[in-house]
View 1: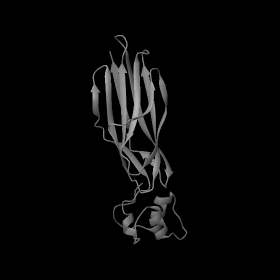
View 2: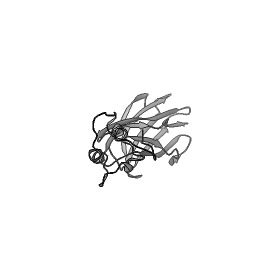
View 3: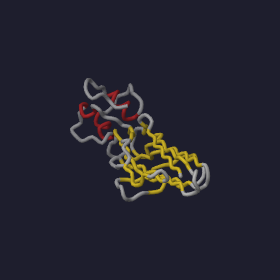
View 4: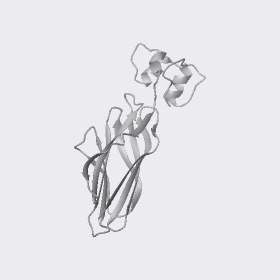
Length: 191
């Protein structure tokens, strides 16, 4: 949770945001400024609105590359706030793919800082439910999720895939990664 954007801040408040717990011991403003990636001179005011954690949301305005009844392919951008220099995270997604016959194919990809270079997170032609990870997300990366689903069989072939961002873990730096509300995408294709 971010510190307030105005008003009084205590060293204990700042310590709690950076390290995840408040302290009754003496806290060093300089040490906390270094941990938060702040520059000198050290001031309490530079911590207004500071957040040690990442909050991940998405734009909900997909860019379609294909949009037919039998084939959907689009990507959407994640908006990540609260990032600080030196932080690296792993984002975690849950995916569920349902199909009524093996003539439906679903794929999930991600990109870092690109709309043309995609890395596969998985491809399924039968039921799947599991966890997917995007690793080494740097504090300044722009992440996009791409989903594609195609019905390629006989009439009546259909399937759907749902991918939900559930949060993640910090692999470098301090803080947490949380999903803001329901960060979820669903695709459906049929013949």
